Image 1: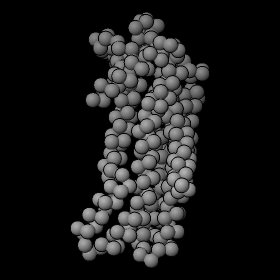
Image 2: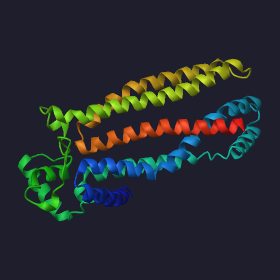
Image 3: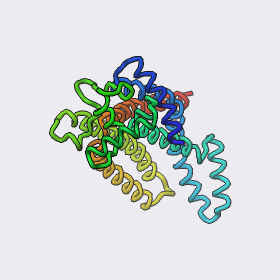
Length: 289
């Protein structure tokens, strides 16, 4: 299934490349187009998250009210979900789509000759064997190596990888002496850090609001406060761990793949901030009606 979607995305990326004749710009435009296509799903996902956060307070009340009556708790919980028009499994669909997208694009950018250029597999295997024989090692990104080493010999495997003075076929871990290979990974790490900070700030804002409700309520107890503290601490740990993970991944991946991740991160930040403001304004309008 992943290969199927990678092949479909390949037609889009190749169409953009044929128009622009630049792989880097094509990846950026590809990322924007895919983000626009998936925008309705992102909006629905954000709405589901907001609704889920909203009904958590009511769920706490129901749990205390029916702590000795599990049947009544289940019945009233289902009524709550029905009243709020919230599907308990609604988030699974969005999560599945995101996972398929991540792996499909990884396959696409990792193997552009197969999924984008649609080069015959026998030719790819021939060039891969030649490169492996010369290097005596198995390449993790054989098609990227083919583009680097065989483009001048065969137009079929040529892709213009030059982007703002950077060669997107380069892999930082293999070109340590070239400082330019670190530009995109560093920007990717910075964007990952910003994305995590924004997510944590939004989550903390919700948790602080919940903290106040817990302090004012009569049915909550210290365990709920401890749970919030644990959540906040986990979010802080993730904020600092994710950039380090991003460094590890971006250093062993071709710059073309790192460029996609960077572009996607930036678009995700913009989308997250925009949807948060947009949906908040919608909620305030409903409350004022």
